[in-house]
Image 1 (tube, rainbow, N blue to C red):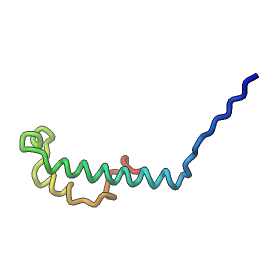
Image 2: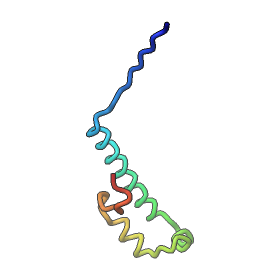
Image 3: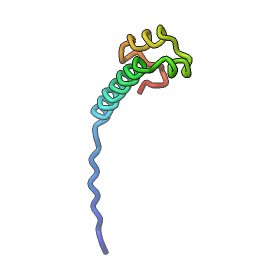
Image 4: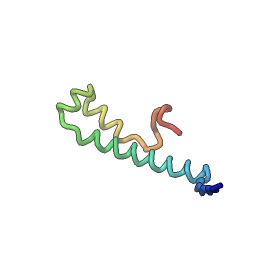
Length: 70
C-alpha cells in the first residue's frame, strides 16, 4: 500500500487579502492611466469625453465601484 503525503502551503488570509488589495490597486492605477492614452476615436467609441477621462484618471486608487471591492 502506497502512502501519499501532500504538502500544501496555505497563505494566511491577511497576507492573501493584502496581496489582492495591492494587485487591485495597481490594476486600477494602470487602467486609469490607459484611459488617458486613448485617442479621440477610441474615446468616441467608448462614449467618453476628455472631461470624463480626466475625472476618472484623477480619482484615487481606493475609489472604485462596489463590485470591484474585495
